[in-house]
Image (cartoon, rainbow, N blue to C red; front, side, top):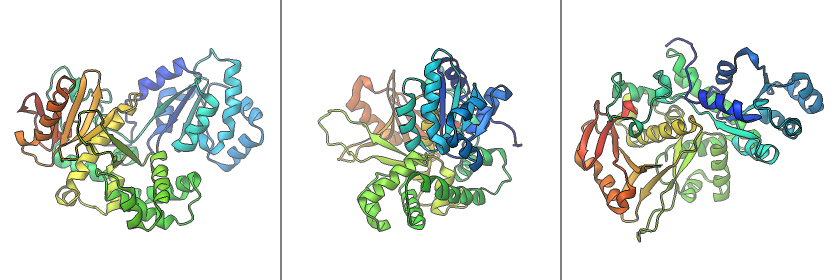
Length: 407
């Protein structure tokens, strides 16, 4: 693949938001393609001003009204977290001309502080969109391709990549820089990304004195991906207080490196697990952090199942966010051991999904789904077993074995 623009599912959502809101806020991790998306969507008609260079930042903070006057509207301010003090002045301008959409586009890579400031200054005036690394449908050039349960039929795309290619993708990750440049050394890029992330975003979000200890925490968390999160155990293993571990987890969430899946709770008279599960936004960075270098080692090693589950859940999260929707994803696990990896809450019902590492589909793979559907009755829709097979297969009772590579 040559170095060209990859169409994003979020494009039509961004265009629509610019037609309806005076301010559009686009947030996501570093290098996810926010600036590139803007440049492709708005072209040369709206200038993009980066607030990261120190001299630009000084000008913005020294005379906010003069700075805004100079650039006028419409305008896009990239990395707004570096000059968040502009937000009250932007609010002032928007309130003076509330009926004009598409005045300001703001991008940022730090969710926690930025969203607090946006909420305080621009509540009711801004659409907030999130852009994460690429989905598989974006990489395949089909950014609007529906998810399996949304398609009219239930057959996989004809040009589905082989499962071995998916393992290479899991190891390489989905950041645009690596997807567009297949000869780029992924491990070298990932090492640089982690170091830049630690030195910039982490220090901006919290005053952390020992970045080495934080990196140990990050690697220890990576080893727990797709598992139940026990902060006490994690804090003990790293050698920090539980409150510190909680703060550091909040940093990773705020900077879009990890996300938590909550258990689905209803009153069924059963004891349900209450701890969340933790996942990494990008499996490439996850593999780098746990020291995996070869697709075969990733597929056959002790983390193979966790990596597959992380990949599937991350795909579902990215697919929802890139439509401008918050993911309605959960997991289900009872104290007795019954479980389903992912529950997708839709208008049509609760869709149970299991992720299995075997390429050979068997009805026993759907055991957890069958239990979930018994408990939830009409609220539970037919489920899916996502696995490294090559074609969809029925497993009985409406459950379909779905190719991992076709998700």
